[in-house]
Image (cartoon, rainbow over all chains, first blue to last red; front, side):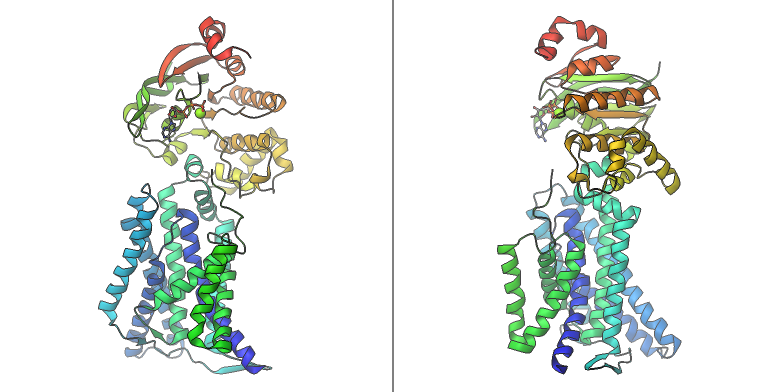
Length: 303
Length: 238
Ligand SMILES: Nc1ncnc2c1ncn2[C@@H]1O[C@H](COP(=O)(O)OP(=O)(O)OP(=O)(O)O)[C@@H](O)[C@H]1O
Ligand SMILES: [Mg+2]
C-alpha cells in the first residue's frame, strides 16, 4: 500500500512535468501542424537557466528567509522568459520562412535546431549532468499512508496552476481565441483582422514559457540538469501529446499524467530498464489504433 | 464620385498560370456591384487578391484613397473590407458567439463588441437560438448566416461576398438577399459574386462579367440583365 501510494505520487510528479512539456508540442502542432522537435531542448535550456540563477544567488548568500522565496521566483521567471524568447526566436529564424514550404522542410529543420541546441548547451554546461541546487527545503509530509515531499507538492501545484491559467487564457481571452482561430483556418482568421504571423509568434512564446516552467520543476524534481535531458523527456512528452490527441490542450495534460503514471508503475512492476519500452509501446499502439488520441477529434477538420 | 474601391491592372498567377490578366474594377460608395462569370473565370481569385489572401503580380489597389497593395490580409480587414469567403469558412470548432466575437476582433472595447453582436443577432434570429452551439453543427444556411454575421460585426464599409447562395434552399437564399438589401440600405457598399446571376442582377446597381481572367463586360445591372449575350451565357435555363 505504501509503495503503491509512493509510486502514485511519483507518477503524478513526473506526469506534471511531461504534461507541461506536452502542452508545448500540442500548442505548436495545433497552429502549424509542425512537430517541434527542438521543444525538448528548450525545456533543457529552462533547467539550466534556472540552475545558473540559483547557483549565482546561492553564491551571493541571499537564499534564506524571504530571499529564498524571491530567489526561487526569480529563477522560475528567468527560466520562463529565457525559454519563451528562445522558442519565439527559433520560430522567427528557422520556421517562419518555411511556412509555405512542403511539410517535410520545417520538420527536418526542427530536428536540426534540436541538434544545434543540444550541442550549444553542451558547450555551455559540459557533457556531464550538473547537480541542481537543492534549495527548496524538502521535509516529508504524511497524509495517512501517503508520504510526500514538499518539493513534490510544489512541483505538482505549480504545474497545475500553470495549466489552469493556460486553459483560461486559450478559452476566454481575445488572444487565446485568435490562437484557436488561426489553428482552425488561417485564411479566415486573417480575414477577420487577426495578424497570423504575430499570433503564431505568441503561440511559440507561450509554448516556450511552459517549457521554462517545466525546466524549472524538472530541475527541482530530478535534482540535476543534463544537456540531453530534453531528448528523453521530450520524447515522452510528445508521446503524451499524441496519446491525448495532438493539438488538443486537455489531451496533452491528460496524456502527460498518464505517461508519468505509466513510467512510474512500469518501473515498479517490471523495472526501470523497461519503462521506455512501456512508454513507446503506448505511442505505437495509439498511432496504430487511435491516431487521433484519447480526446482528439476523429480527424482534423480541414477545409 | 470618388471610388471606394479602385482596382487597376490586377494580375494574379498560380505558379506559371495567369488567372487574372490586368483587371480594372471600381466600386463607388453606396453601390452594390455584381461580379459574374462562369466557373473558373476568376471571380474568387479577384476577391482573394483584393483581400490580401493572394500575392499580386501587378496592378494597384486603392480603398478610400489608401493604396493597400502591400497590406497583409489582416490590415486590409482593419481598413474596413469584410470578406465572406467561398465555402463560408466559419470556425467550426468554436461556438456561434465565439465566431461573432472574432468578427469583431479589431474592436477592443468589450461593451461595444456586445452591442454589435446583439445587432447582428437581431438581423439573424436563427443565430440567436444557436448562440452556444458549435458552428460545425449548424446547417449550411445557418453557417452562411454566421459567415455574414461575422463579417457584419466588423461594421465594414465594404462587404464582399463570394457565392453566398451556393447550395442553399431558395427560401434561405431569399432571406439572405433580403438581409443584404437591408444592410445596403443602412449604408454598406457591397460586392457580390454569384452564380445565380438573376438574383444578383436584381439586387445590384452595376455588374462586371469576367471571362478567362479578363473583364468581358461592365455595365449597369439592368442593361446586363437585358443583354442577349449575357442572358444566353449566364442566365440561360434559369
Ligand atoms: N490554388 C490554385 N492553384 C492553381 N490554380 C488555381 C488555384 N485556384 C484557382 N485556380 C485556377 O484559377 C482559375 C480561376 O479560379 P477561381 O476560383 O477564381 O474561379 P471562380 O470564377 O471563382 O470559379 P467558381 O465559379 O467555380 O467558383 C481557375 O482556372 C482555377 O482552376
Ligand atoms: Mg469561386
